[in-house]
Amino acid sequence: MLDDANTAMKNINIPDHLITKVNDYLMYTYTNLYRQEELNKFFKLLSPSYKYIVTLHLYKDLLKKNNELLKGLDQKVVDSLVRKLKTSTFIPDDEILKQGDLGDSIYFLGRGEVEIYILDRQRQLEFVKVLKPGEYFGEICAILPNVKRTATVKAKNYCTTAVLDKPDFDSLCEVFPILRERFIK
Image (cartoon, rainbow, N blue to C red):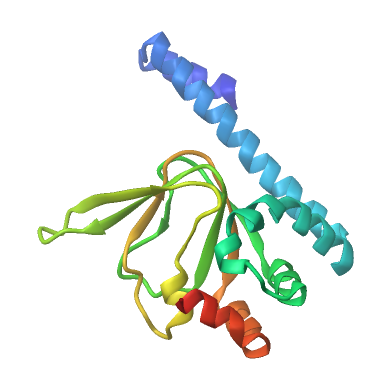
């Protein structure tokens, strides 16, 4: 892959400093995509109980950072939440959420940073803030039915997120109403 990319860049006279940047980007992106595929294959090999143990290990720091959201919750609630999480990775500039789309999941940022933007009056994206590991986004649409995304979220760098889909969130809230109360609060 790198040989083909290098040949193409040399043929169109890309300067060496830019070739280095592109190669770094391709290597890091390929490595992250490979890791994601490897993790997905690994999870398919595991029984539900081992998948839970591995998932808990992956997200233990993330869950500690979200202690205000999860503080004081019964361990059964946290365990059930962890069982529903799915891992997604994003590369720099990936649009994770788009303002105006219907919401379908909550994202917990495990690694990397994301940028939050909103459309201004001229329909231009205006930067709002950066979220760091341990923070979450997309929760408004998961809580309220048929609500459109209120912001656009883009990966600032390479990001790993734990994703909780709306149907899973709703089913958890049926069993553990305290979870919805926490998100509303």
